[in-house]
Amino acid sequence: MNNVKVRFAPSPTGFMHIGNTRTAVFNWLLARKLGGSFLLRIDDTDVLRSKKEYEDAIRDILCWLGLTWDEEARQSARMARYDQVVAQLKAAGRVYACYETAEELEVMRKKLMSQGRPPIYDRGALKLTEADAERYQKEGRRPHYRFKLLPGNIEWDDMVRGKTHYDAANLADPVIIREDGSYLYHLPSVIDDFDFGITHIIRGEDHVTNTAMQIQMFEALGAKAPAFAHLPLLTGREGKLSKRLGSLGVRELRAEGIENMAICSFLAKLGTSEAIEPFYDLDSLAATLDLTKLGRAQPKFDEEELKMFNRKFVRQMPYEKVRGRIAGDERFWNAVRGNLDTVAEADKWFDICHKPLKPEIEDAGLTSAAAAALPPEPWDENTYGEWMNTVKAETGKKGKELFHPIRKALTALDDGPELKVLLPLIGRERAQKRLLGQEA
Ligand code: GLU
Image (cartoon, helix red, strand yellow):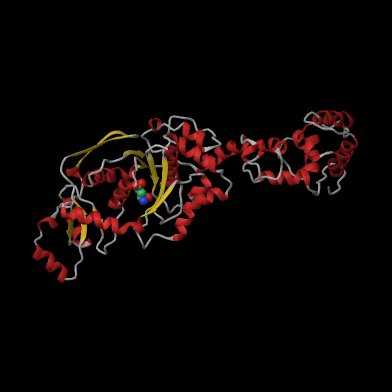
């Protein structure tokens, strides 16, 4: 491992959805591609909304996806360190106390808007005297704290967006500590990224403005900001994807039989100039990662497309990737996979081939003639065609009239994998009994 270190920093305030899963996938792939390490950081500064249940679910999904981490951190355990940095920044005049109430700030915001001006905080608090502050405190007001931005141009070379600029004059000093003393995410994130030696940050483009402010926070800590990549946000059919859209939760996709590597393959290429193709392990996917191939447009995420892709993924899946997950062997898997929507469906076909079933007889004359015409074993994939030619010649039946009753008798279903591959798996003894209407 070199000194490259990336992180995935979920807030445990909801389940993994397709949007933050994409962020996790990109960060993991970048760490792997650059030979670096991957940190999982739990951003639990919001104590009211953070829940253990969500945190466990996030870990569970990351493990299932194979996005394992080398190191772990949690913001709630680092409060003393944040307090220490804030004390330094206060002393340096970069963090200041404010006493406006939410209502007062709202009035100021509306006033500026009505004047056609951007709703940027006027830094009124910087003019307060100690006596003012004391008076506010006596009134029962508690301060919140802002980080003071320095004037000037903030720029970085974004790995996705290219050169990106912000004029600090267009940004409001961000609130970093709430009235109740709790931290907002911005500053703790920078302190962590600095302390843990994070070299690259990939996140959604909803964080671009945060990045501008955070670059100044890194500078205030005397640190060099990491490299940034902002991914265009996914849109769903319902518009912007939200953490709360349960229908796009990864747990649900997993329960529906979507493969972990199908999700990773799909998300890593969605919105890039490359085709979405199945990758069956993360290392080979990581080798193809190229952030310059990401477009600037917001890609549409369509659950139906993912499901269609999953079908293709399953149908080409090598046996070694399902070994231990299905009942059958390689020959069985290769015979049925071309007809599956999910891996779990393979077991249904295993049972049809290897366990007794009640056949459905639609044309007893035809199926008993077919039973009598069954050739001796050993059987292979040519057996079915040769056998059908004999039955056709003997009964005069052809097309659907011939094939459908045979399929119903052998499998009790209307469709499924080709009978030429199923027949050798079912075997002569069972096939004969089923064609004669006996449970077998
Ligand atoms: N906890 C933040 C989020 O989930 C992390 C953002 C970041 O990557 O810095 O949005």
